[in-house]
Image 1 (cartoon, rainbow, N blue to C red):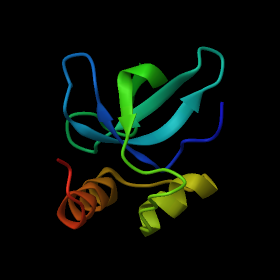
Image 2 (cartoon, rainbow, N blue to C red; image 1 turned 180 degrees about the vertical axis):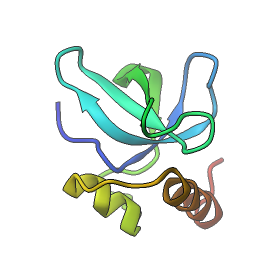
Image 3 (tube, one colour; image 1 turned 135 degrees about the vertical axis):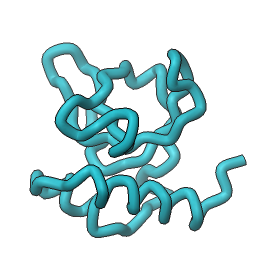
Image 4 (cartoon, helix red, strand yellow; image 1 turned 45 degrees about the vertical axis):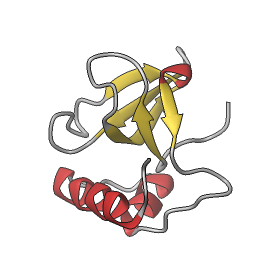
Length: 97
């Protein structure tokens, strides 16, 4: 499993279906992504989801350069407020049809 930290995903299953979240970590033991949006799901208590239950919105072809994504990839702490702003910038700058 490759490293998905710092990428944006859309929940494809569960009660948060359709919501856009950021991958803030990975649980290598269970193979789940740890997701947060800074509002309903804080970084301190991320939602664990299987990779099959999310749709990747960013990846190797579509990159979203934002300081929050870079900080997460480097393992630096990120605030919920900064994460909310990054998600808002992502939503504003992309067409999520």
